[in-house]
Length: 130
Image 1 (tube, rainbow, N blue to C red):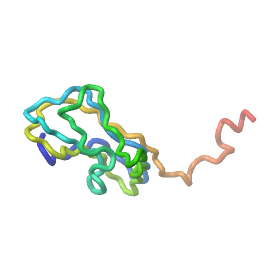
Image 2 (spheres, rainbow, N blue to C red; image 1 turned 90 degrees about the vertical axis):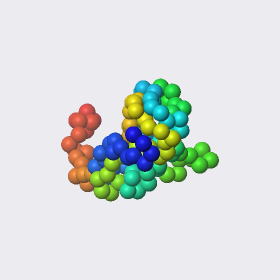
Image 3 (tube, one colour; image 1 turned 180 degrees about the vertical axis):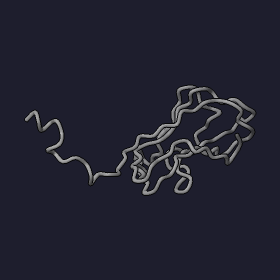
Image 4 (cartoon, helix red, strand yellow; image 1 turned 180 degrees about the horizontal axis):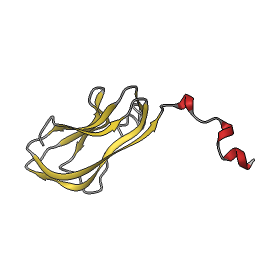
């Protein structure tokens, strides 16, 4: 893998609210690079909306991408996808080639489809207990 490579990591269906996304370093990076930075985002929208310039070659096993904040506030979250898309990992910069390592990409999502078709109150178990 090299600079500007994009990995489509998680398929996101239409009408999904993404509360947070990022990745965890599972196995340390291997390769010839000494300066790799990684973005996590939605390529067609904002390639670094969830994480920007994460220092992969300087990361240790167990490290997570921090949320992007401005004065302690995550102003870019949550993210709503009206159409199906993917959460992507972009190798933003790399001074060499990444030949190994494992990251686990994750997202906390709420699927907003079919809200108008949800069961009414008389169809759920809690009403039987009343």
